[in-house]
Length: 468
Image (tube, rainbow, N blue to C red; front, side, top):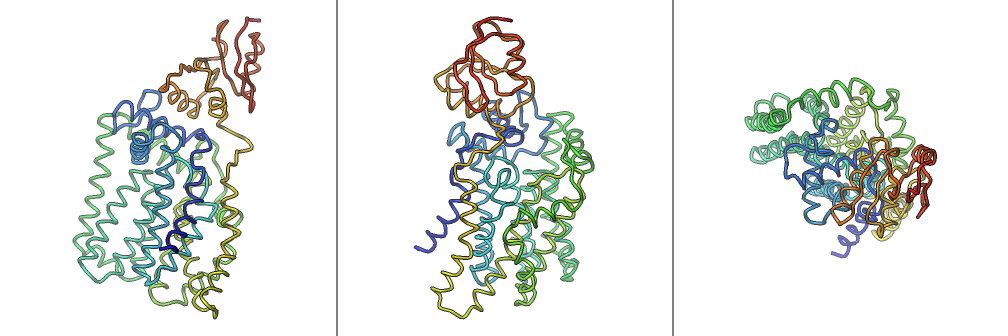
């Protein structure tokens, strides 16, 4: 019991520590937050809105937004409610690895080591995955379920269990797609290849419950898309332009990189320091017992096929590789489990040695999230709003889209504030205005005389005195 509690505390800090400290990041996190807030207000659970209109730019299905709305209802409109679904998904992913290891690899140690690897991995405990209100942590959880339950289905000889596994596989496919669209299907080539290598592909398709899973998944997924198109005409076209033909076949918003970019980042940053001993862990896996060999092969197929798929995409972003990390962690967990068993020492000495091995990466992970503020912030507005909570009514001078500002404007206005966005040249004498960009300051300097009421982090709160 003490050991379990200690392990849960170890897991807690990288995932949950200071989860609500940083303001919401601009772009995806803040955009989802605005959609969640508007869904909470308008009660339309089918179509996410942004700025009062159906969101035709972020066209992912709304499973993540649904989770955020539920958290808003429980915790209120704040950073915790927006980020908690991601953090919980990360926790459940960790617990899933331990459960899988204990139940089907005959030892919890592989899962425990894999969990420690995962929570000290730069590609997993990072902005845009486990610690922010984006799609990716929830996607990782459902895709990990998807893959592991397919493996269990392939390896089981019990028809009753096979039925449960394939139906849970189908449900996780639905949840993956409803989280992040077509990306949720990108493990399927690896699963197909694994069944082929194990000479069980024919058995997969002869099992009647496979067809229930396939047809049921298709019905639920297509059902959402067709209903959405019915009530939100043009949705199909937007999905094609933003996700399929657009984001995958073309470079969107200048997010371009060479084919080997993800592989290079895996070695240089994303899986440091574990990447250095990954080859040894893979070698140990292929030397292990039959079940260990199979899960080693399976994990490699998942990692390689997914990396190849996203490497061929026209648009590349650093967090797109998030789904591979639970499987890299499994490979590493197998390696550590082997050396733990082979190491000829007392149990206490073994524990001490492995604590020393994990101590530095763990401390580095905690250091990276401990009350750190980004050098170049994209969330200046929230910092300044927090600082000036006594000022209840003012304009925010801005020229372009900013989802971060939109969320905080709506959140503060729910609590008795009157904050409105305004084009800088539309300010009037007597207005109180806040602005944070240099180009806005130059424009206001050029057209107005003003009195500074407060300034911090490059933001200004001013009272307009006269026109120039």
